[in-house]
Length: 303
Image 1 (tube, rainbow, N blue to C red):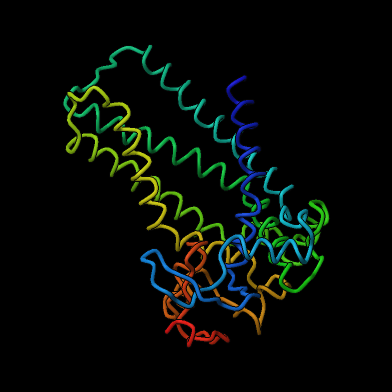
Image 2 (image 1 turned 90 degrees about the horizontal axis):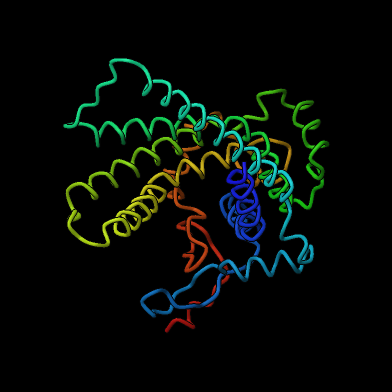
């Protein structure tokens, strides 16, 4: 019980601290660029024309709505985080209890040759089920969070309170409205999890020397690196999911002429891929100007 409470408190603290970052990231993902590009330097020190980064974007939001405005959508996101942590823990606990019952049962023989790989498969499957259950339960709060952020684009107030937002979505879209963008989000989580754990297993088994004294540290580092790599590869699923969550919801940021109406998440994926925007919002620093966009940037300053 104490562990669950500490996880909830830690997760809530991280959610509060990262809220401005997510706010900026979501607005960039939907393609909102209120600030013109400036002349800056890339990671190689070369002068380039690039879009404003995280801090400039956050400062613009603060100038419009005050510093408190940077925490728009925090309440439903906190609800999502707390509920997701509880559900995730309950599902894992259920599997652990079942495993204890099986271990106490007769005829329990473990195969030494495949025990390591089987354990990875079993743990990954359990984690997949726990994450999927948490995502399914908390997705309505995720949708409300995104829409309350995106309404900044049209200066709307359609999704202000948690209860009012629930009533609005149910009245206009029914129960399906609470699960807009769920499929790509689930697919992205599942693919990322299996990719991360599979790569970590291969690295820890075949690339690391088991005789090294810091073996446990090396394994934790490899898990972090493979997790980062997997999240980069599955980022398009995150982008498509967020776009579908606000698609054609009555907000300026999700409707024409600002944004096209997507028939499905596959249609959204194909359009983004055709436009070359599959990584939009993936980076909050050193942001290059998207291909096909025209901005007022004095390129003579780059000479």
